[in-house]
Length: 574
Image 1 (spheres, rainbow, N blue to C red):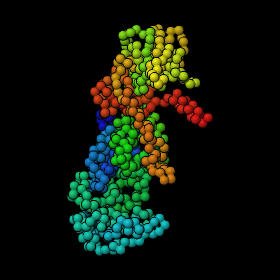
Image 2 (cartoon, helix red, strand yellow):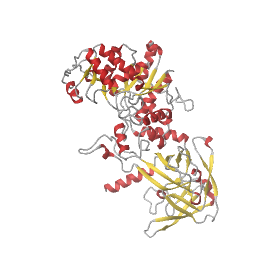
Image 3 (cartoon, rainbow, N blue to C red):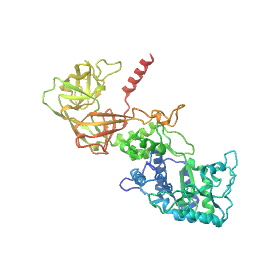
Image 4 (tube, one colour):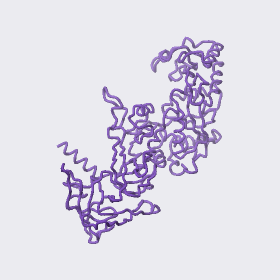
């Protein structure tokens, strides 16, 4: 069940009690299913998995692990027009990345012959018929929540005629959309799903696994429960939108007289500032709004993996949000907190300058280089230390200098003294400007008695800033990612607007002129780092020898940025 090289057992999967878990506990106590627990994760391979799917994956696999059961990965591949082998491969990769190994990988298409035979069984029992109504007519005949449905004029065809027509549908005699096979249930049922639902439709389309062997394909409702039954699934866990489909799920199982799994519905994951519609995510890819399914701004598992999110953080997040019977919206900040918490434990600390400004220490010896000992991770001593070169000319962040500092600013400005991380105390003595009057170089003096940031005389220094030696700096790029959407609910639109109008125009800001400490010269794709004072970053696959590219995974909380933002807002109001 769990991948031995990346086990998902432990605190992440031993989640707090929830109603689904309580049902499994009660079933085991009563001996239902013989004490077995067998779940499944059944995605349709019509896109890449996203963070919402992670909740279902963790729930299904987590229950199987906790109760020493099994969990299948099954592809609901009954719509050849939208499904691709690429999506199948990505889903398998994502499940393994999250730390889970399926007990078996199955496909609904494996069961096409059996499903066909069961459809014939229902026809022979007078429970299914071939209907010639168009899709629009079917919807019209179905009625509404307040109006009862009308029976199709083809509902009372003989068993013999239905068998003949269904066989001819399978043989490819009829064009797409000309006929369907429908269940004969109750056109007056309060639940619209029970009003003679469609079981099969005609689609002359090539399937990613079965090719052109079939030109009729079963609908989801006729596939899902029977697939569960074939695999002897005990607990079929679905999201809440399938609650109204449960009577139909049970009807097929009962009429066919086959093994009966138990369908249980839970709340799907909804996140602020996040869009989880595969149809709309596909539109973002096709329209070139993002670079692909694995764009680090995408909520897909491949996207957040590329951005630097860890599977441990995702599992922790899914455990903390729990499982309920009521749909709600989770704050994106809770996910980011889980990511920060995990990266704080595992990320190497390094120094990087994203907006470089030269700092020249006038009284530092020309040509001298000192190696400063830096801690790789203060949370874990086993990470050890590294040496960082210090010299006369450094790079500091432009935001760490103000020629005219506002109130509450304690970083570098003329006359002020700051601590250089792992280095010395430096006092600003002057600046150099270009013809436009912009500061292009800061000058200062250092105190040789303050190596390591110590102050032997006890003087107070209110700010510590980071730096990189100019002579030793590695050139690189940092991609600063923010929310893809600028509003909490990207689906909401103003009158006459469109959901795509909610895109955040600053969701990606590239810092191509970054200066990095020399230890990052050989940074490998996937490597996780904390750029001190800036945030957590992951090495992107676009890196090339001597030029690493980093994706910002999540930022650090910056008290000054909040103060400055509030001050600017106050000025605008005044």
